[in-house]
Image: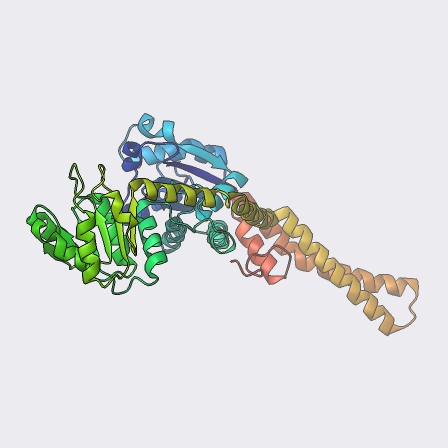
Amino acid sequence: MQLVFVGLTHHTAPVAVRERLALTPSELVDLLGMLTHPCEQGVAPLMEAAIVSTCNRFEVYGVAREEKAAGDGLGQLLARFRAAAPQELTPYLQYLEGEAVVRHLFQVAAGLDSMILGEPQVLGQVGQAFQLAQSSGTAGVVLSALFRRAVHCGKRARTETAISEHAVSISHVAVELTRQIFGSLGERCVLLIGAGEMAELAARNLSDNGAGRILVVNRSLERAQALAAQFKGLAYGWESLPQALGKADIVICSAGAPHAVIHPDAVRAAMARRREQPLFLIDIAVPRNVEPAVGQMANVYLYDIDDLQNVVQENLAQRQREVPKVEAIVEECRAEFTAWLSSLDVASTIRDLRTVAEQLRDDEVERALRRLGPLNAHQERVVRMLAHNIVSKLLHSPTVRLKQLAEEGNGYESADVLRDLFGLSGSLRREGHG
């Protein structure tokens, strides 16, 4: 029994290749079935399987009877499933086995392997992969323990370090900065000047984080209305820019004009209508659409694209400083899981069971001999032999059966149950992680 992995990520494959393995939930279920049920040759590649599938990665985690056979066949199976020639996928696939599989999944869950360091969404995606494997019946004892421990590791990374703190995208930085200025975003009005993609993304993040009304001003009223409809907001023609500016708390400017469209006089008039309440402007246009002098006005906060990029880089550097702490958590969790997995070795389980039984036998024999009082050597030998024979005969059948299951490749499941029933060290169930 061996943990195996095959997959590709943004590190190893371009988006055109990753798109080939973008599967629907029903397709993922079908593939899980192919991975764990006998194929034409009569042998399933994996005894257990789970798939982590996102826009940046497609990864198969499995338990194989023989890791080499699984590694050779998994890439071909993926190509066959997508009706692709093997050479279209296999050059981009990465293969891992044993502890390397454990470490990789824990790094993924902790946010260390993401395109954006520390991004939080991947932890939920790992959990979803586990749920799908469970509902499909392809997550057994080992993968269930592995994915539960991975989620636990990811949660530790985010609660014990700052790996997921400090925004590292332009749109999220905009949200972070507005919160610094306004505190709560509830009831705040956002004005989009222009209908660009970045402005829309920033507005969506602000809206998702509690911002109130959305206003859109654009040279094309039709485009303004289409964008405003996404946020249940209001659209204005270009001539209404001064009035809209007076209503806004947050302005996202990406008009695409070759010159400034917001001047100090217009902002001064807007601030008068706002009774000098703070005004936050994000100018993400190049060339800039807001005159720099606007940022010198009282209670006016102006950030251009370079300002936001500087914040992104500083925040990313702060996350980077947390990496050693997260790596230490990953290694700690990996060591715990590896120790548990090693405990499922049938030979060590039998040895631990016999050790516990024999210690119990010896303790009870000594207690009985003290109660019986003086015995001759023959009588004491009979008592000891009786206890020895009882323990040996009780353990004989489970020992033989466990060895048979090990030869069939399923011994680890029974070993875990046995460890739990007899309170042996290493049971994941008894330790509360299973």
